[in-house]
Length: 521
Image (cartoon, rainbow, N blue to C red; front, side, top):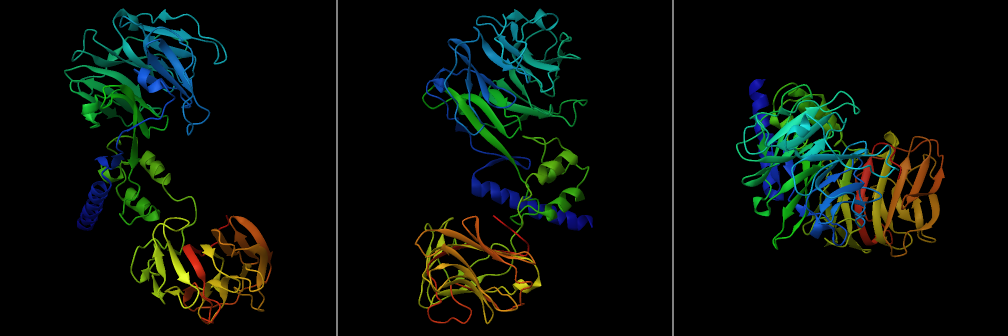
């Protein structure tokens, strides 16, 4: 058993290496880091930016500018940042507490830590005051407050450190109490040079910080808030850009940092951390990956250590299973799917199952002409795809969809050999119809034309009692035929069930999907 497991692990790890090589992504354990890119900011924001911090909801950006600490806002995390507001205070290294009621920063000309407070987010800030003893007994720079508001991480050169600047932490029992005597994070985190600008993740299990010699970004993790921090790891950002001032997104998936661009200007950059959820290397995330993760439960197997971002914590447990669950598909898996994204050849590959189709007559690939990616063009004379798929609709619930463009009345998109026409354009007016297939033969027709030369996503759903027709996400017809007849022939994509003249599709077909369950738009 051990030998089989080791062999499987080697195969999967080889697959990971292949992914890294093909995508030019860098890897820390099983978690990839994307190439750093500049963050789109409002005009004038990036050029004046020194250091920054995000509000807990990600909708406010506190920045250190020449004029002082200012704020940019956005309505959602997907929106661009708005213009900078007026200066809140003279200073640098801003850090907003998760409650939004405390703003920590350093003075403009010293390394003393200050704080401004307000009773609610609707009130203006009060006057800045120095943070009291014992934190204020020595220098304290670039502070960051934990998500629960009970830990304050900062850089300081106070006695008892291991280098020029070290990362320290002070704690408190409640948000109303004073900060405790600071504790040095120790030599597993701090190096001999200057370590500064600590940023604590929302879950309190990851700490990212800057190291100044050479300019680099480091991270350390721990399994719980009660345990010690593990050895710091270099995130291997591009040191030529001199990264500093890290800020993690609330979910820990994105690291923002300040860096010098090729022209010597400072700006905000970002990189994303992406866990590898496909543990089996088969191209999809499903129950098989859960089996692999559970197989290595409570071990230090790098492959399955998916959380927390960006490093994992060296132990496979519940949070790794939770992270994997986030990558499971939130929609039913197709039994067969033909995306028609090929550029050449005589086979239409099914990305699910062993149902590749054979091109007949001479259809033409259009790699960039599909509704999604590529598509297959049929001439309406003798072109079609002979698909190796046998499951008929009479065995249970069925959903079938296709994206089409062109066609003419009477032409068929999907049929089953010597069986029924699943989806076709009504001979009278080109409206979507199905024959598929009541035991008492009866077509179901809509009034929605699909032969108007536009792209349409058409679908048929059978739930065991009712047939539904869909066009572009809207239900256009239904009936209750009581039961469907069983048919077992191969599928024909682009022609009628008997390949009769006039049933061959003249246009484009793209992204055909078949499900053995009810899938409604």
